[in-house]
Length: 428
Image (spheres, rainbow, N blue to C red):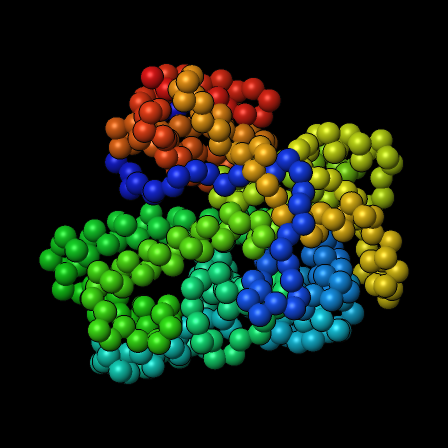
């Protein structure tokens, strides 16, 4: 356990995302004038059945009458073979209520660049230099595979408070099959982490000569290119108003990932593989660190009732069920497959979560904070404090999260112990 006290930007948060004990029906409505689209994704070790679970979930939602889109962000052909149809770079209807699209980062670069060119033509910031950039010549740099899919998913899901999309498709469910669990976790935590960087950048822009000189033009270019407001123009807005708008937008998106009625994140594992089970447990803790909840867990493949019982106990309080392993070597009868799903599996796919067991619990009488951190050991967790003991920064699983302490509990860490997958931190 490590403790430190360097400067860190404060992120106001009244509480951390909750973790569920039991499942409740999510408010997903196929026929509602003000419906919200739910984003669903899966975390697990490579080869554990993430793509199988994503395809099966998409088929199930579509057969339930929900307008569903399966988003595949990989060159792997597994989803295409399981679906039995070609996957293109724009949503294409594969069957009733089910569309599918493949994300390719090199192609996703083009639209934001064209939008920047149009804004630059009006603002004349680069004096025509940007207009000479040929998008098709640009390659994909590390990190882009997380950033650009987030922009595409936002168009499908509408987490951000935008209006008047040029081409808006109202899906009830968007199922995202990411490149890897690590990249998906980065995407989940991106908006919250971006808020930290935003505060530093804003401070630099407002308190330095070069920032005051260049920031207003660059800010307008980025703001209008991203089309963050309803009119697509920053005319009449001060830099302070634009900064505040961006902060509010990021906060809204961050809250959406903690809302299980808008975002469903599930674990998948191969029940016969110890490594796969341990990885799923680890991703559970990593998801909490990234700022979201896990809505349930799936074992991919037929197992004995004893195995199901053991895994259910191991992943308690998560709801657990098995789903079938699907072979890509033959044509699949999806009606039969979906009808054979257990009621538990179907219930989990539609489940939201409650706060009966929060991932963070405060005990003001004992001045202690209990952090539920499955998949981690005490030696892997590092604690840091900033702002005179008003916050607790938790580092684990290559993720950092800030926990704002209640006023009555603020103080320095006096000790910590690890018990039943939870870290209990005592303050003094």
